[in-house]
Image 1 (cartoon, helix red, strand yellow):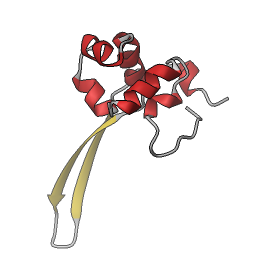
Image 2 (cartoon, helix red, strand yellow; image 1 turned 45 degrees about the vertical axis):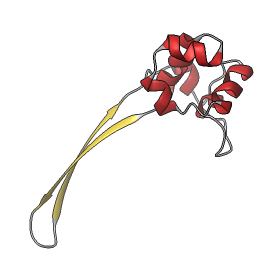
Image 3 (cartoon, helix red, strand yellow; image 1 turned 180 degrees about the horizontal axis):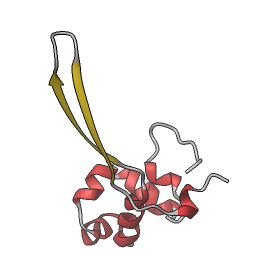
Image 4 (cartoon, one colour; image 1 turned 135 degrees about the vertical axis):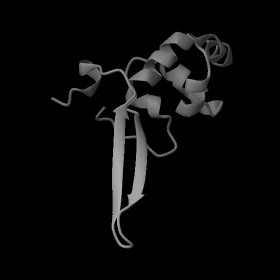
Length: 99
């Protein structure tokens, strides 16, 4: 995950196992990662005319964190903030190895 992207490029360009034409179709159809997570593989495949399973697999490798915050007032000037941070992605050593 050491590739830099322009802000307008699809995040899946960072992964090297999707074909360029698939990534271009995702960009053309404005299929964000959030939207892809809401769809099933068959729907994705129909929209891009390619393998939707590969696209969903790629989405599952993007580093996503679920954050749950609880804020509790202690005094008028002090707050207790509790964060629960849970990784929501599949770790792949080959993708994330920076060496």
